Image 1 (cartoon, rainbow, N blue to C red):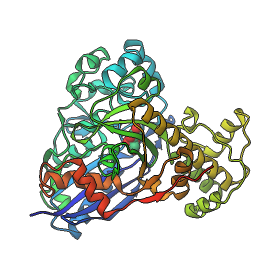
Image 2: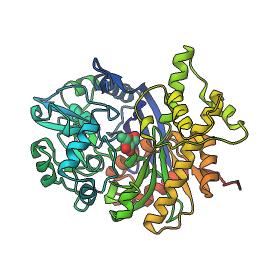
Image 3: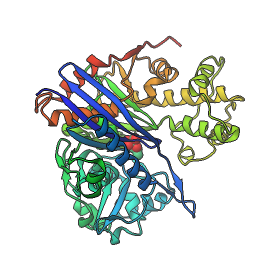
Image 4: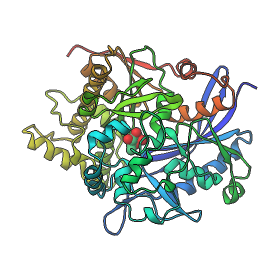
Length: 473
Ligand code: LRH
């Protein structure tokens, strides 16, 4: 047998999906079965949580519908945003997981750096500084001691579905507690930070069969389907499905975040990489995702959310972007990674304040502000690509943009113009495709030893990217 169908659960910070993935020698096709909203939910004291209970219900409903449509499903794979976790005791989730944009983590940063300065952390875990990396969250987590185990979001879903208590390695690499050299838990660091080894479950690699649906999940969904670990960090799955076209290609996985970097065989933890805040996250097949987080479409989606609340009506985003593309004259820019733009809120007002503070003109219309947002993101993308090239000694010759951002033609063209490099856009559904492909390989549909290059050739054949040439500016 050289093909079949699998289900992919793909949870992003603004929406989640259940997809069916059809795979054989010549075909790769996704069919969306369910899509549901996601986002920060403020609690009584303004703290930010996820509504994991609702997410899990949507996942089970989606899988039930997937199996109804396609009784031949061979397995399920789960990926989500990184760093966040749920604490489990007695088989139950203790609380709704915190959202990584909750501001409590600032205190965690201070506590952790007092014990292990950032310079030392970088040598050990290879991670760029992000105030929400799991180890900072654990430092302010009041219930860690009450938990038998802490599970990252995709592992938590797999646990509820199958009972398996594991930590998939690509996502575990974003906790800050995995040794960048060995890929194992850094138990010495954990001990110094007061994190009990018992809350860190055994690490497993993508492709591992985690178990079959059990208990209520099996009853509801209706069959003892297998759950297979994929690159459970959404960015790891997305990078699997980037149809890298040259050895020196860079990629941008662009959704809520823009993850900008290159794939390496070995980590780079030089002083220069640390100073540039480049991360060495774990990729599928032991590859290294050497990249930098740029605040991506979050800036635009929060602005749109604010305008929709003002209007009490839905905004036509393609229409807004068309209007933004025809804005002429000087486009004021701001630093997309300004920390003041990271929490949810009135993004147009915050961006206006950041621009005004820098003495820049504040755009007067929504389309002009949308243009400023898109160009500022594109500039940050171009800068990060140049830095990735400098830090790795590569002459980057093309930029692949995958994820929702690949649909944003204004952003793709602006990234080409500002970097002076061609941009190859697509596939939009890279994350779900990477999830599907790693399951397909585990089933032997590409040959069990198929390399990532083989998987990427399949993507390129079925989803030829659209090319944006840089225009002289
Ligand atoms: C993108 C992403 C990114 C992380 C962030 C928390 O969805 O997983 O790679 O840095 O969310």
